[in-house]
Length: 93
Image (tube, rainbow, N blue to C red; front, side, top):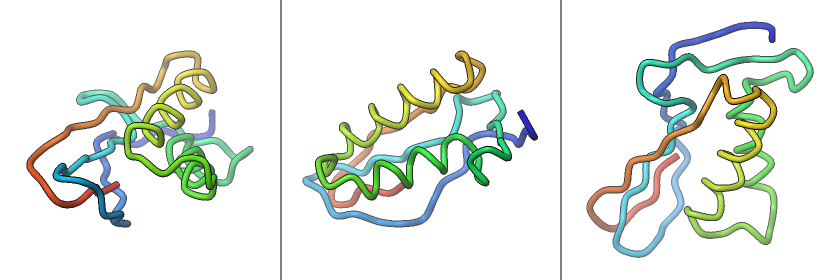
């Protein structure tokens, strides 16, 4: 693993969804986000971009599950993405 950063970053792209606001975080509160030279990104960003480009993944819960499972696997559970679901109108990651 090439580097670590404090978690809880928010990526500011937006996607409209139904009646909820979903925040995706690169790691759980109090944990770090890991980076790797293999992906030229952090694990979370890499897998988020992969999900974003996957036409089969359109709902926030599908995208989160995709990112969550792959980041956990790639980092041997050293980094576990998190989410927070609130209010209405927009999905933010």
